[in-house]
Amino acid sequence: MYKGVVMRKAITGGPAAWTAQEIRAFAAAVFAVFLWGLLPVLREHAASVPAMQMTALALACAALVANLTGGQRADAENGPLVAVATWFVLSGALVGAIVFYFLGLSAAPAAQVTLITYVWPLMFIAASEMLTIGRVRAAVLFGALIAFAGAGLLIARDWQGGLAAAHLWGYAAGLASGTCWTLYSLIVRGRPSLGAGFFPRLFTLGALIAGALHVWIEPTVWPIAPEAVLIAAAIGAGPYGLAFIAWAHGIRHGPVRAVGALTYAVPVIAGALLVALGLAEPSWQLAAATAAVLIGLAISSRTGRARAA
Image (cartoon, rainbow, N blue to C red):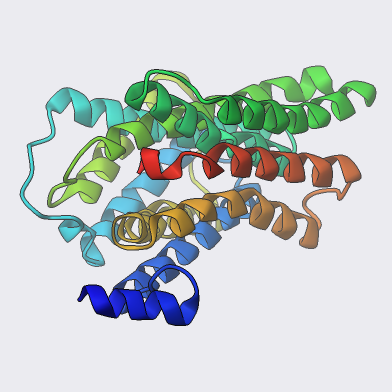
């Protein structure tokens, strides 16, 4: 076995070749990232439905998809039971991530909000280091400075155009969404097993929480236009259904570094689709901010990956 690994390293000049399982897992992660990139485009076509109502509908569809596609068996090996409080924190973090993102999309340009939201992998790296080694490396702080400077370019552009006050809430909502994603990811990362039925239960509880918040806070849009119903179903089936199941498979069975790096592509895919479909205005500030966020993430995650793993 050892000789086989050495021979493959000698032939390829690098790490051992990916196994068939790793290739399939990496393909699943690519599929998930592409679905997440579609999310702002889908939401743009159903902006009339309030954020919490849309979240409840989407998560209900996600629960159905998880049950029908085998998501109830995801990572089903025996492990410690998930405490009731943890279920509510996980579901609440998931609902917060989706609702804040939808609110951000309704208050500011979609490409900019998506870019700011996807600073969350950087927050995840920093929080993970605080929990594991008790400090944040200088490389992470430097990467954060570059990434947030890129996000600041977008706000400065709005400030010059007199739109800062109107869009500031949207950008803040995007940052809040990223914070919720960080919390969700930290909890999931710390569990040795997700357990059978994890995704259907997570999505169902999330749909109930979002539905209760909707009834309490938002006005209900009814009847919902057929197009909006189809979009809610598509969001639940895709970005918050199949994508979650595919990503869980990719991150647990694929090459960790390669799969983790795919998250950087989400704002790029989303921005490119929005510009191509005429839903976002191309600008040098958007391009520069995207580059800054990607560079910041790359710098932060490059050093010390082996220790984090």
